[in-house]
Image 1 (spheres, rainbow, N blue to C red):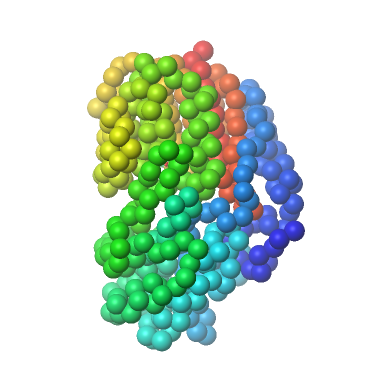
Image 2: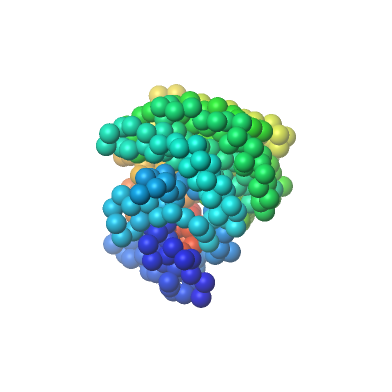
Length: 381
Ligand SMILES: C[S@@+](CC[C@H](N)C(=O)[O-])C[C@H]1O[C@@H](n2cnc3c(N)ncnc32)[C@H](O)[C@@H]1O
């Protein structure tokens, strides 16, 4: 069994020491337990899985000063300790080259490391994104503004690397906030294109440095294909895609001719979704930059007759207000997918007032971790 050299310490993976079959069993058990405890009488399908290594398309590493500069992932053993990552078997074969080059550059330039308690220091995070099918890399160095980045030298060093997935885009992101999360207060393109492109099936998707995109594209392409297969659209349906992100699910579904509306909070992500529809020549889809609750309660759906509702919310799931609005909307079928099975089952329970859950199908989007995605199919009863 392959084991990453950081496994015992790094907080990125929890299950690498378990045979993959056992990991899948643990995930299906979790789904079955939730179905029983929420009394959602759904058929639980077997877990769908694919390549278990080098599947992630995005990583967010942290800088720390631990008797010298390190850059990596938080330790699962020691709070606040960062494990200086030299390989990452769930991300990319390019990990070591990129991280070591950036560490050496930052040490040579004597950049300071941000300390969240004193709110002082320069280096904060490193974002690396890779489009797995098109083999493109995007890099974002997240800093404060207490020092000045030698942008020319930073770009030069990165471009000298011979990577499996060549670099197409380099950013500096300024984040002076107190938050632990990466806040994109200002982003400056230092090299190349403002986006990388991923190809899922026959569609191209543009991914910006701060765009949500499913982290496992090889699994995502099968997942979107399955959604399309389950819905078996005739081309006459009205489809509403809530929390649509860059429009991936909606674009897959629009190809059958059905009219699709996508709703997404972020204006910038909606711009990307519109661009994605345009570059894929999909005309029967429109996007709304709006909070889902407001969209359903105030603006109302663009058409009163929504046949198919697609829901793919953030981990927290749906509020009661959104659930009530969906019950009022009365779509004939609902596809609800989520990366948090706990909130999914809670929400399914709420929807069973008017819907029956045909099945729940887990997808192992995140091998070697405790996480996974679940797709559920609901029919109005
Ligand atoms: C799990 S992602 C789904 C992305 C998309 N369905 C896909 O497969 O790529 C959730 C998306 O919901 C958006 N979002 C979060 N809260 C929202 C809200 N209240 N209203 C509308 N969109 C929201 C996020 O910006 C994010 O793009």
